[in-house]
Image (cartoon, rainbow, N blue to C red; front, side):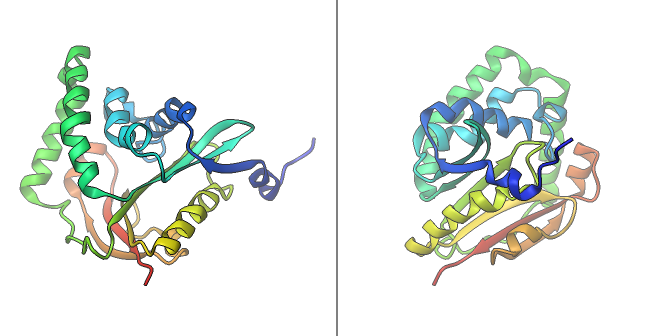
Amino acid sequence: MTTVSPRNEAARITVRKFLPKDRDALRRICCDTAHFGEPCEVFFPDRELLADLVMKYFTDYDSRYTWVAEEQGTPVGYVCACVDDRAYSRTMLLRILPVSLAKMLARGKIFSAKTGRMIKYNVLSAFQGDARLRPCAAREYPVHIHQNIMDGYRGRGIGRKLLIPLLEEAARRRWGIRFRALRQVPRFAFFERFGFRRLDVTRVKTWEAWLHRAPLYYMEYGKRYE
């Protein structure tokens, strides 16, 4: 039996800019990895709504800074960047949220027990403030990013392959970039290796009760180019 080394496996992965044909695949990857690498249905029943909230801006409105990792023509991961927070917020509020929530109501999934549980614990978290992070300086870190890789493809160097073109773009344009993550350890070593600095971290016990995982740390990282 012939074994394939991680280096050869990584060589089969190519990274390129997003194409419209990738839309459904990226939405699927987003939902299939939303719960600590597991499908979103573990905690939320409506994957169409989740895909709209997380990915629709990057696939439908501004895909200039979205990169796709593929193996033999099949997308297996992505990274995307939002370079205009005002445009992002305006598009989410006026164009994505109203339509997506209306469709969710029509599907009836808003009335599920999982949705009720999600609302309960997030309202509780808002009152307690345990998921509140210190605001980062928007002028220093104006670009936010989002990345996901399919189960079975992690640990093969794909994250690095995806991140490099984004960081090269950020260096050329002198962007400051940031992201938030929810993890069971208080650091994100992968991004630290690329020069990201942890800006803040907090333990969120209300989300631990909601997601049945402990501990859970909510954190924000940033990287600046002078």
